[in-house]
Image 1 (cartoon, rainbow over the protein chains, first blue to last red):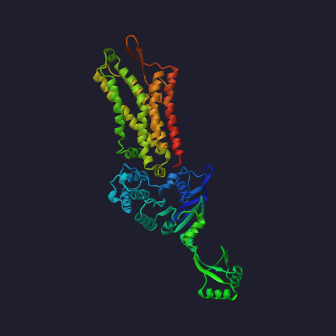
Image 2 (image 1 turned 120 degrees about the vertical axis):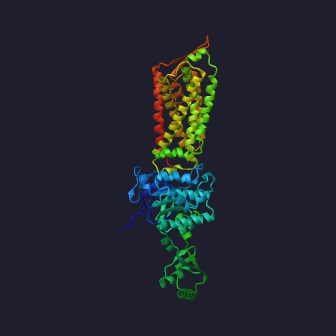
Amino acid sequence: MAVQNLIETHNLTKRYGKALSVNTLNMKVPPGAVYGFLGPNGAGKSTTLKMILGLVKPTAGAITLFGSPMDEKNRIRLLADTGSLIESPSYYGHLSGEENLHIIQTLKGCSKSDVDEVLKIVRLTDARKKLVGHYSLGMKQRLGLAAALLGFPKLLILDEPTNGLDPAGIQEMRELICSLPTEYGITVVVSSHLLSEIDQMANHVGIIRKGELVYQNTLESLHAHAKEQLALRVSHTSIAADLLRQEGIETTQEDGWLLLPMLEDALTAKLIRNLMAQNVSLYRLEQRETSLEDIFLTLTGKESSL
Amino acid sequence: MRTLQLEFYKIRRRKVWLSMFAMLGVQLLWGLWAMRNPKDWELASGWMSLLYSLSVLDGVMMPTIMSLLASRLADIEHKGNTYKQLRTLRPAASLYQAKALCGLIILVVLLAFQAAVFILYGYCLGYEGNPDPRYYLLSYGLKFASCLSLFLLQLLLSMLFANQMIPLVVGLGGSMVALLIMFVSHYSFLPWGGNLSASVVGMDWDENSRIITYFYREYSPAEIAAVVCIFVWVAVFYLAGRILFTRREV
């Protein structure tokens, strides 16, 4: 039996005037995953997540949450099993951390003991009585995560949760997010414009570019794309290409280079000897690697930030 | 109900009550000063003059007080960027309703306090007889509706605009409009003239004797329409606020 995805979007589209913010997006988030939603700034990540939470109305398309199509009538019922932290943490600065969580706990209708537990998880127990207005940005971000965790929902949607955190805070947040599926059975959707961040947290990845989902699969599969190649620069490219073809090696040409798959050392040596024998001079022989960054840049466009 | 309780929980330490009573305090001091040392003829119609004076005071001050109240209730959400979280937990209409109800309850307390203080003051000054409960209830009922319409207008603006200067300027402008209306008429179809239309007491000033005669108003059809208009504004502002807030994307 096929595993039911927690989130599925079907041709989800959002248009603001003439600008197409999200274009026929089909996202699939399997249960138990840490789904990294990756894309450059302005790619449409936040808009997509807001549509999933019903904060923004889609221009077209549909959203299925926990297997049920979401509409205005059942939205709140379906979201009862969801926690979210969108863009920046929500808080009342004149109330303490504990009082802030009390508000969310009351609205979610979950147990009061959850407040203590989530404060412990995000390590804010000591600051629970302090006014949130006096919290640092990192503490506010952790409080936002604590609020999202209240009631231990099945699904957690976090939009750029490490924004504004210092390196130690980022590391801490990362570890916490990674632990959620195994320790609490929570599926996490986490968006970021940083590939390295998603690479360290997610096991599934969706890459969005200019509103379109250009890649969606496991992170493992994305890593598989990170292949190694040999690059040759010779005096007679066409002769060299014919010689390699005779050996059953397919090549491609790029900027005067011949690109071929990684070969055994013995075969490489043999090919070099053959090239010499044909009076083809070898100028350069390089081993090239297509990194995750290269793949990301190829998928999202060279102008993207990493 | 739970959402309404949380509205009161959320305004802890915001000194909403204090700021409201401070505004009311200014109004009380103004009223108490204006009504001090009444003459004999003023004591005879004291309870009527009190209702008239209050309608004037409320006409000028309530647009500002209501803008302040609405702003105090709504800006906590803008400051903390909380709408996007709250709207994943409760329908937008329910959140709007809770804010409106919270303001309504505060308004009832304020008006009850105002009535109690001024009636007590009337007894202290020695006004003849007792206040007529029918007219006082009618007056306060209409005053409540008028203030509610102003509050709902301000709430709409305060919830839509993160910059609270916009609704506060509208509130202050409303007080100025009310003042201008007073110079030309004793009723108005504008929301800021509601407290004047709602007054159950009229007055006639004799230029020669310099004596004011107060009387319970007999409403002309236009004045009745102006009173009905107060309730229309309540409905319009409530529905407009609810629809705009519900449809708004956060």
